[in-house]
Length: 229
Image (cartoon, rainbow, N blue to C red):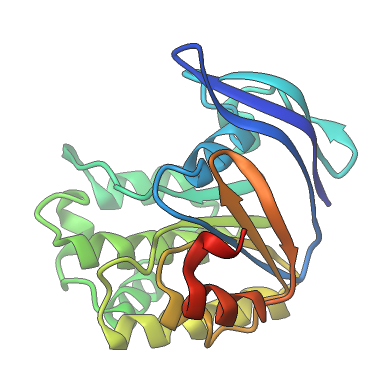
């Protein structure tokens, strides 16, 4: 279980999140939803203990306090897909994967990359280098599959994606649930998320939790916007 208690988060002395209390369980898909600037990405980064943020409160992973744990240690259990993946020209993707994977199976990786729609030579390119925005999201999904973390946080991975990739994403989200992983999806794509087997929706507005419950709230948001809160 991932548990957040009384979390306040500040960036440059400005409060971004206020009194966040949440519990996440394995084998479930959670949607964090809300307008731009509501603190969704900040929440994800706070879980990973981004050093640019100041925090008050506690974050527990399986009853272990990870509030101030080093990010590289938290990342052994939690995979985070950045909203805007960085490009690193001078480190080949092959080198990265050989370093971070326990078992580098090139044939398996290439087949998976092909299935996800990545260029044939993606292993020999720099990390995310010369990839389109959509291809970067595909590579993020590939990493989430290969790294096999207990918890997967996907930040706007569906943004700007084509229908083919969204279908792949939907398939793997279901697979992750079957593997008893915890999935936290941050998204603005109302049409897409309504098709998912979401267990709980969390609505964030102005850094505060306004709703925690079933996905039926998405229909109300679609009809009336966030004014209902």
